[in-house]
Length: 378
Image 1 (cartoon, rainbow, N blue to C red):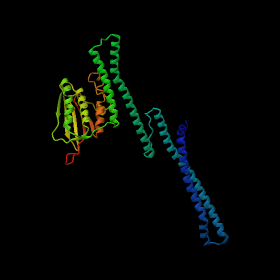
Image 2: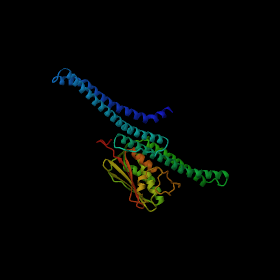
Image 3: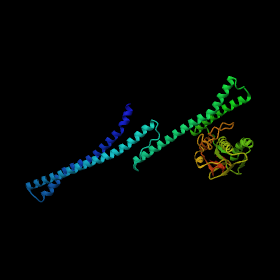
Image 4: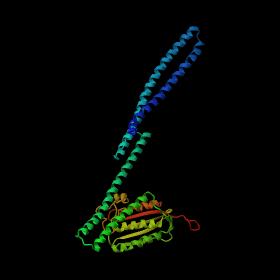
């Protein structure tokens, strides 16, 4: 309670201190000027008048001038003091008002209202403070939105396998479903799907937190492409989708974790296979860039809209909202997100490309080429 009371009194105290500080500066300057003039004026006037007049006339004239000067300076000091008070009040209210807006908005954000924003009135330090606060509030709002989406998506992804498990187990327990190889196969598929989702989420959180152990070393691009394509080829043949590979000779090695690169390629191939109909084609290509090697997985499948291109790497984002991941090969929905995190953890970049719906899509990621010395070592 004591801390809250202090926070509530902070803007008022700040405004008071600003007003007093401005006012005291102006007041001290005015009093200093008045004192200096009053002290120096008698000597200066006395010496100047004494050279042209004599006796009592000199004293009378000096006293008259001193009184006139004092009255004039007193009026000037009072006017300056009043002006300083008005200006100090306006400035302090403006600064304290901006601080009060920020404090009130911060209190509402702390209570969970992440849509709060403060007005940006001027392009000065206070305006920069307001802009910085608004940027922070926007980031918090976006983080909260993503958190709620993740919770909703995870619960949605777990609902289907849990329902399958519960239905079959209740049926077997009550005797309405005979314990059979098919029933146990469905139970195994449901548990495998939940296990895959949990493992993928755990790996994603570690990758985004940069807590994955990466064994960076020179890796042959053709080697990781062969590992990924040979592991996926039976699935392509089963669906009737052609898998092509175009890797030129003489490519330099990349500085990366070979297993993670193969994992990224496998995720991209699995995504391309899921969105390419039978009779389509998926091509894996590699090319050399400026100090980097680019891997490209292109398909002739469904394609992507501009909205999809901006969100395809988000957790659980589905290009086709009606698509289900409940099949035997249903993914966890975070494969592309994991791929992006892995590529960035290895110092690379990844992007998606598409000419539109029905015109296929391509995913390309770039990794730095390994710098070798004359002995062939990094």
